[in-house]
Length: 576
Image (cartoon, rainbow, N blue to C red; front, side):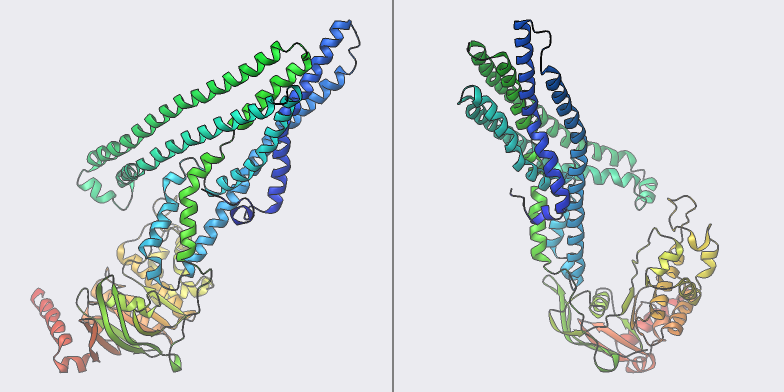
């Protein structure tokens, strides 16, 4: 796998960081050889001084000071080098995440986001395989950059050996490189084994999380699933762990062979020095230091390990860039003349399954339109086309850029009550937020919370509070009211009151009508007691709008709407 060493990922770290890192790394790579040379000179002077019985031992103090300075400076810079490299790596990772988030958000429609190929690549980027070492693309890019500098350390050590016998340096460097490449292949094999265990590890994690996830807690407790889930989790995790441990043991055995290879190489050099009668004591010490430095430099390089871990992520990033080429969303088409929102002969489907087949619809400012139909008729799909989340396969959709939607599965944010409403219009003032809550009768439930508007809506937090399904829906409707107050021109309400009783739903709908202003409102609901109050009702059937009109007009027509209304009214009468 190739990672950029100039520009590309590396440029995201900042050239100032890289310049400082370069200076530190070059010193640290040359330091072992410099220490070896100074040590050799020191030993040589000591040997000469002892041989001549020179009490002054001239220059030894200077050598000791130089050696001490090198060691102290090396330790200080070494302690600064790693944090600097880690910071550079984190900056790269943060910049990559920011870029990919911008690319996904810039996709013009939700169906592009839901594309299977894109989701596969995003899942790869989130895989635990890429984070099990707590290092990713940033660490790999910085590691590859540092590897380019490693050659400086090897070259200086090689020159020291060559100063004794010219071919010792190249020969020892060649052995160092061969053993390093062999070590890389061993780690690559290990990472392939780890990659193969990911499906089992992921399954185990899912089983384990189901035991503690608040979403699943009710059924897990009711059905007594803890033991059953725990067994499945342990089986999958144990299988993954067993394979990783076996691969790790095999890796350690092979690493032993690398160390033995280095030991043999060092032994040959040391014996050659020992039998060479013309080499001074200082040269012997320098040679030993140079061999040790070369070993440390070549064996401490984890560049290929990091690159192997990051390889799937780098490839995924490349594919995401191709699937989401833009960094800014294209401008959305305005509605028709006079602020109208229109669909003309729209066709849409999921895969090979058609859902809408030639739908034409116009929404006028301030109008309330109800959409009815059986389950699977395409009501929610129509809503997503109106809000610009999906693009039609054929036909045209002129949407309104200032749109807000409330779906049945609306989000429940772990934020304060105030922010849970304000999220519909972040620029809104506190007064506007409270006014929106009053408009849908949500202030009472907020006032009863432990900390009022500042209560975090989650029981997981100290002083937090939770809401019932109906109360949460009032929060969601308050968001719609706030969006309308802050200029939204289209409100889409897709089963927003499913958890409210009939009276509360009617009241909520009346309040939304009151605060909608000039916004067009699209209401999707199965309760005809609410639907009947709409200015216009459209019936979806067979992928088309088959009926359109007011409640009275559709009842008089005696079509599908009248049949569904009579069926629901008869059920209520029988219940009464």
